[in-house]
Image (cartoon, rainbow, N blue to C red):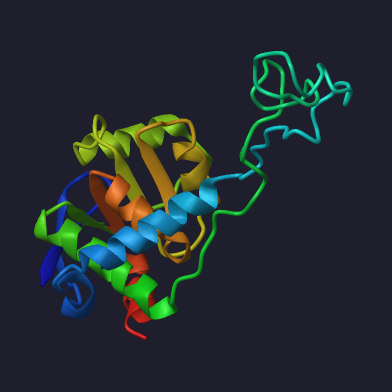
Length: 209
């Protein structure tokens, strides 16, 4: 699969790159994508929720009425879950929501995500660029040149680039990651995927193992 290379002004450089069919041209595995995205979202959960149960609610443990002869149900302390202010029955407790997935399945999920974007023609290959200093306006100009200013986009760098990252940090619709930080969720969450030339080799090398 071939893709033309654009410069950061949105102009065609006249060069083309070959995108590996083993990464960008497979039949997507929807279940692998589902599991990987589910794991990513589960890992974002803090799991610090907590409700007080009967033994943890403040209050007296005195038996509030006699056992028999009242005509109503028997009752123990005021901390009974049936009473207002009582404990919660089977309430949430702090826990981890994370779960494990095989590396091969996660690679399949990312390849499926790339293939989905390729089929939708939502991948742009951009030649490497840099800013002398962090400048949001310069990054906005790049988005305008690529006609992405009103779209959710993900820029994938070959290596960490502090100036480009800081230039994009204030923009809600665009994000910048290095090729080693990519996740299936990030790929699918963006409308357009902008791959810098230096990232292609790293992506294909990591996913072809």
